[in-house]
Image 1 (cartoon, rainbow, N blue to C red):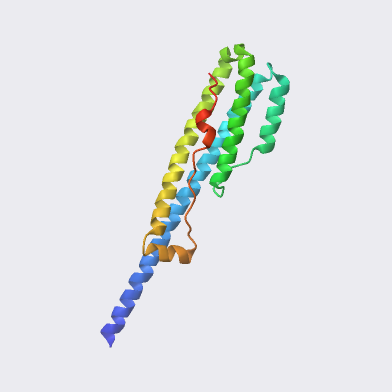
Image 2 (cartoon, one colour):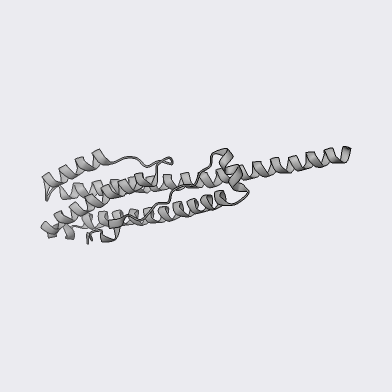
Length: 184
């Protein structure tokens, strides 16, 4: 009777420890995704700041167009946080792409703007932040893959379901992103 009781206690203890370990692992994976989304938000915010500086430079050339675009960006800009969704990120990248397209139209009308050293440096900053966003997107998608894979595996799937962990969506590549205008 005593050995059976000890075996039951040992099995229960192992199950409890495994459940705690699995929950902790899922929390770490979920937090990695939240952190990656926050990093994307930081990079997009920096890219918006560089874009606004770029728009300020175009004011001297096309004042009305620049002011209209700045107001449009301010009204459509939102902050990407750890709780944001991939659709929120796509929306913000769409706002940036639209603004870059409109700036490209201004620079076509004023070729001397392309030769402006401040414009060149600011465009380099915009491109740098674009590369950082791209890297952050890769990290985010990698983190999502790890969580989704873990959640789908038996027996973790049982614990994940009970604890409310769900598969997360990937950041998909924006359809028109490959057709982005060149600003150089």
